Amino acid sequence: KAGVTQTPRYLIKTRGQQVTLSCSPISGHRSVSWYQQTPGQGLQFLFEYFSETQRNKGNFPGRFSGRQFSNSRSEMNVSTLELGDSALYLCASSSQGAPATEAFFGQGTRLTVV
Amino acid sequence: KNQVEQSPQSLIILEGKNCTLQCNYTVSPFSNLRWYKQDTGRGPVSLTIMTFSENTKSNGRYTATLDADTKQSSLHITASQLSDSASYICVVTNNNAGNMLTFGGGTRLMVKP
Image 1 (spheres, rainbow over the protein chains, first blue to last red):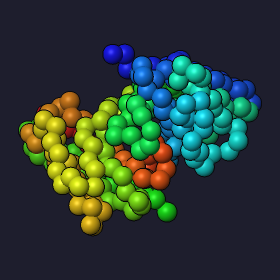
Image 2 (spheres, helix red, strand yellow):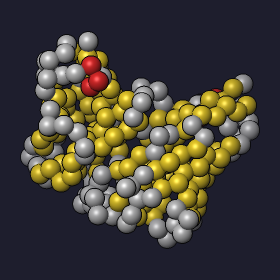
Image 3 (cartoon, chains in turn orange, red):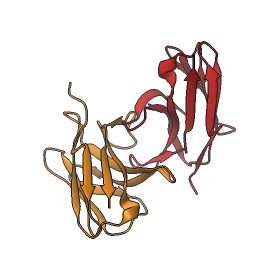
């Protein structure tokens, strides 16, 4: 069974640009959550999608948005990039409704904003 | 406010020694507590998951304990190996918040030969 796949693995963007990250969950999983990890703040919850609907949202500005498609794949978009958005972005997939008993993480997308 | 606090922040031990990492949480209502291992630059990998009624759970050389009354958990690593060098993250799920996870700041463990 394939794991959680995130693309791209690495990304370099310029301030003011926008970026789209992709996450393909484990086959059959319907919940996808996104997290931002920085050295100073640790892992912070961005949002969760379940069956194409945003079910939970963390405390991030509106520049951070996401969506989920009918095949459960999810994308995360960050507009008007700032230097502080440089981070490892992780997605996790879970098999069922909430709260799930397990969350499987992808390898992450390392975003660098210059 | 839902919070998860871990201690120590970092730890250095010699190969073959045991160690114990601590986690205190204030997440309520509690659903489950997980310990993850994260190698640098990679996604976290689950070690154990415990619900309210479970006091201990083992996964090889890793043993997690949970005291739901005091809201404390520990992760004990036995006979450490160089490959155990990583960050260990305590994660708590709120029973009312879908799959939103609350993460501790992690303990960075370094195992030296």
